[in-house]
Length: 192
Image 1 (cartoon, one colour):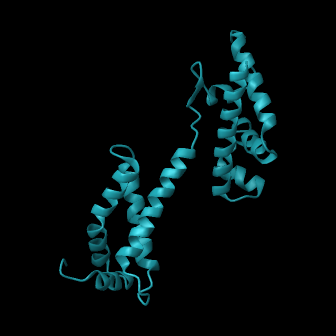
Image 2 (image 1 turned 120 degrees about the vertical axis):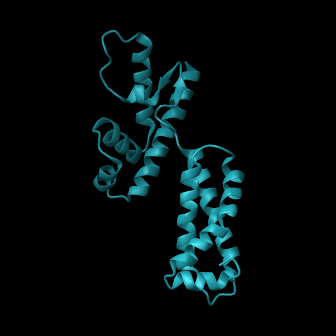
Image 3 (image 1 turned 90 degrees about the vertical axis):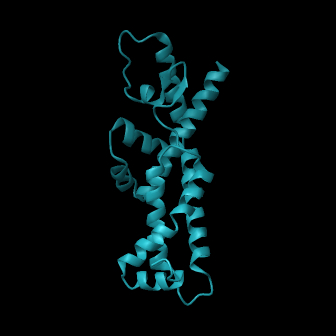
C-alpha cells in the first residue's frame, strides 16, 4: 500500500475501506509522536495522547472534503496541532483535589466533611473557616456545583442535569470553582 497516493487512500477510507484507514493511521504515527513530544515531552499519558490522535485522524478522514484545494496532510496537521494544544491547555487549568494547598493539606481534606473530628487541631478549624469564606467569594453557579458535587455527592453528570448545563460546561465550571477556591485560600493564608 506504500505506493498509493495519500488522496487515493483518503478517498478509499471515506468509502469504508478499513485497510486504507489503517494505512493512513500508520503513515501519520510519526507526526503524532512528534507533536506529543513537542507539547508534552516524554513519559506521561502517551497511550491516551496517541489514542486521541487516532480518533482525530479517523474524524478527519470522515470530515475531509475531497473537493477542496487543501491537501489532506495539511488539514490533518492542523487538526492534530489543535488537539494537542487544547489538551495541554486543559491540563494546565486543572486543579486536582489531592494537590497540596499548604502545610500538607489538600482540597479534599478540607471539603470532605463539615464537622471536624474532636481531635482535629485548631489550625484545621481555621482552614475550614477559610474554605467557608472562600466559598462565599465564588459565583452562585460555582457555589452550586461545589455544593452539589462535594457536599451532596452528585456526579458531574447529575450536577449538569440539575443545573441545566452541558456536561462539559459542568466539568469546566467545577474546575474554575476549585481553582478560584485554591487561589482565594492561598491569598487568605498570605494575609494571616
